Picture: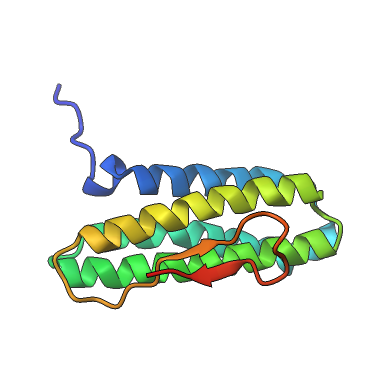
Length: 145
């Protein structure tokens, strides 16, 4: 019996990291208040899942330009996730330490997305944003060339 060949996206470290990140957020939100089931919990889960899903979808496209577009979408979903983490912190659903840990993971994924995007042979607009050093809240994201 032949073993299944991995999909292109499965080989991407950024997809693997995004998948783990999404899974972590799913587990984390299991115990959030029931009244948030269709609110913050659902929105955070959708945004987090969208990161890995867009990477996977883009990897299946026929051109680097299309792939770059989906990496931009993944980046946008990652920024949405980060913003929702701040709301969860404000609502006391997350500790500051847990929030910071998740934001660090989001920052790492953002850097990987930017690096992969830069590696593509296209003139797609780049959005390599990275977080400022700790203690620089509330505007924690800076554009970097």
